[in-house]
Image (tube, helix red, strand yellow):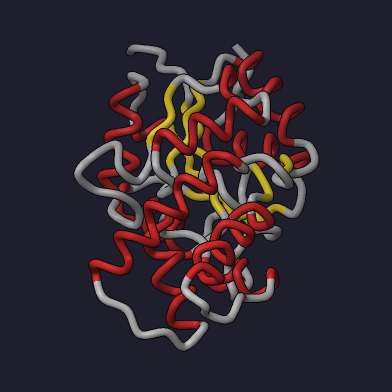
Length: 228
């Protein structure tokens, strides 16, 4: 029987890094540009998760604005340009992330990011946060023809790193991540410090952690020993 390395897929915003501050700045930048009310940071946290366009659309609705696709396209362009210039101005990795990724790489696991953030923005952010070298692949919301919560987003990411679904786990912070994992047939671990407006346990992941110090034991419970 072939010994296949385990694979761990990670969401990005709200899972590996606290990116809400910079996403808030970018969203409010485009809202201010059309004279719309800005949105408080604690409210923006609950709008994140389906990519930049969805964030802007939710932000427009939250600020009581009327919009159409043409306006959304204009705002998305402004958002992406501003965000690219300020992508890691206030964003920080969550406690324990770097140590956890280093331990997983040492164990022989394959690591990938599977996010609804655009691939280019994801690569830019991971590079700025000194995390990019830990990952074998980064799949954004525009990498494939589908994105989370479609399970094929996860499965195609696994194909990209040469991993099998039977030896993989998804780690995320939201209902979108749990739904994607269920659709792909993968176990899923939820983190409590992300951007969902309901506690992650509400969505019934296979495990819930409040710090990355607790990730390795849960991974080994789901996949077996990781050290090679």
